[in-house]
Picture (cartoon, one colour):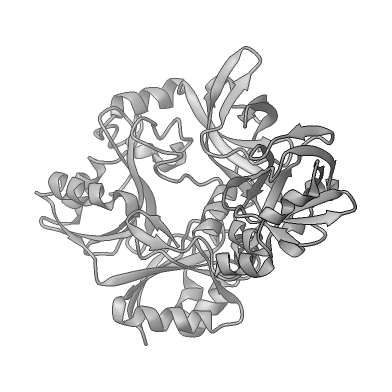
Length: 119
Length: 353
């Protein structure tokens, strides 16, 4: 699993990259009450706002970590946004992306580096 | 922790906003509201003169408030807007006033200037203010202060305790039964710890304080109330007693009386309403509202209501649209989403009358 500075996790699943947010991010957001997911089959560029997360505290965005195509979204999150707080690393994945070259994942932090970032 | 009205305040404690909110509705929540302004008005020429002077600042009946009772009040300006909302209590030989933290820098000089002839305006800076709210608030506080079981909504009492003389009112800002307790600073830590040691009591942060008052349909100054908004527009006509209205014994005589009495007679141009978004997306403060033929006001407070289990909001709309069920749209991130005008409170209040 790889991690971004924006507190997303990236996991390779076959030729796809699965994206979610870290437990650290979920805790900082507080209780999540609403999630707006992208449409599947959307082309996105790195840094695009692709999801909105609203917690009891505020609204924030999830940015696309890479250029690519969103091929699947986790509809369970729209129905049960609280999953993000309950199981951020597994059940609460946000979307799956198809990218040209999985090798670009090497640029992201591994778990130790991420843990160091969040101190 | 976040900055709030010049204080560092917790948005939430360990339980988080959602659990804190639900706990307050089912058991008891303890709020540290010491940032609010506590002020004593000590009469210089008798309580009647003080009441008359205070009535000259608010469209509210002060003279008729019985000893041992508290009332909601509003300072108005000459344009009929609201300078602040507050609570005041008749404590026999003086009035005790609690004002918003963000407005005490305004309110204290305002009172000192306008009440100079009739009162000494004494800011109380050596006391904390705690609020214990929820259906088990009485049970819990009564373990320390048995007298509180005899109080009803908006009663005030001074009670000696282990923690010093407590100034207690049966009130709060959550829609729940509960108490606000002014405690000498040397006793504040002990009282808070004694309450938090009870299994029924959790500490509650600003996040849940906001969602609780929003579900109860209560205004937050600076958001739902401001200097341009009249109490009539804000739907606070219940706070303007008959004695101060047209035909009353002490009709008018407060700042902005011309506008406020006119709006009472003929209705205001716009009104504060409850709003229920159709989907799950919260409509927060600043969300613009629309009807088919154009703009229809905006949201002044909004978020998720944990007890309602849905997004809720309040805002101002043209008076003709202020009818529960009226379908509007709110613009969220560039998309217009359906929202309906709704009755308030969103969650039934349970004051002990």
